[in-house]
Image 1: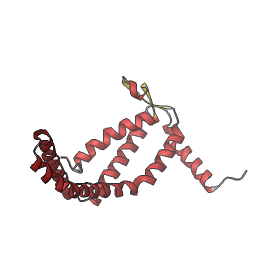
Image 2: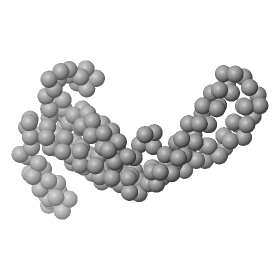
Image 3: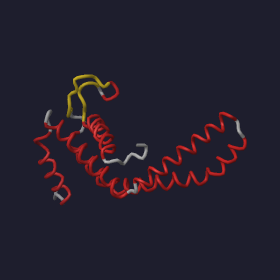
Length: 170
């Protein structure tokens, strides 16, 4: 059976990853990849999305929500009518804000899936990290690729988004 270019490329990638198949090398490889992907994604958001506008919109939406809550709690019909007049504009602002962030996500979706496919194909259910304490919802102390990657991704992504100032809530 003849190998295709894709088969050859896959075999080269798998051979290149082979030294990282065991703990602790696998632990650091997955951590590094999660950090790298988070950094690229957050940097792209920082430079491709108007963060100041996003913060302004978030502030406006939050103020509207507070008014809406106050109108509901006090049962103030005048305030409720005033708030409801703004609802359509607020929803459009939220929609635009979400779409701006979504465009950046779509840009990186295929490359991230490719990295995910390569790494999950390489590691499968192999233990890539050992935790000093138990994560019951992440399969205990011995963490397979999926669990360790999720932990690393959130552990890296949230602080990086704060450092790069892309959280509109900040």
